[in-house]
Length: 236
View 1 (cartoon, rainbow, N blue to C red):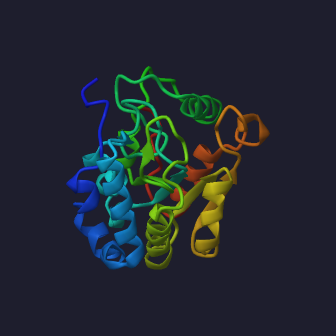
View 2 (view 1 turned 135 degrees about the vertical axis):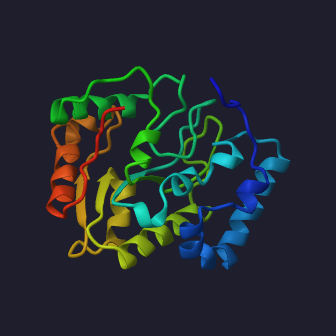
């Protein structure tokens, strides 16, 4: 495994270094009172010695990996994986060398059925970001072993702002909303301007209640091709 497995929030979490096009879009958020409260919360986590994922330099990876102007598909997750070495700032993705978690395994199964995807041995989805896919969690940090532990601290408002900017400034983005938390962001998206696909979450608890068979991967490519855009090569 190439990355450290334990981390606490560092200065890059508190004073984020964002890719220029995203920094322009989100600059106003960093001056808002809610973001000051979020920074205070993260500093308190650090002071208490809590282990927080992903490591500080990776918290904003989704934005840094997929510039605002390049986004053509958005996959919305919930919060980062809460185990050592897993999260690296891209929803559903894990660092190379880490066993793919169950939700990602179920995504692979659906892709195999939908687009003939060959299931890889790793769970790193970085290649998708290079094709214009924003892999965005609703909440960008989590405490070790405690899923949902950073909900309601301000991240949701920040990521709502990111979705709102995309909604207003661009057209024809394909949004993949899996599960209730992701679908709640659907209220921000103008479905007359964008393509919104919804399904159950790929978690083992819900995948067989509407995720399997959703064919979102082939449908995404159909929407992209209708706009004259290159389809996604899902193969990793």
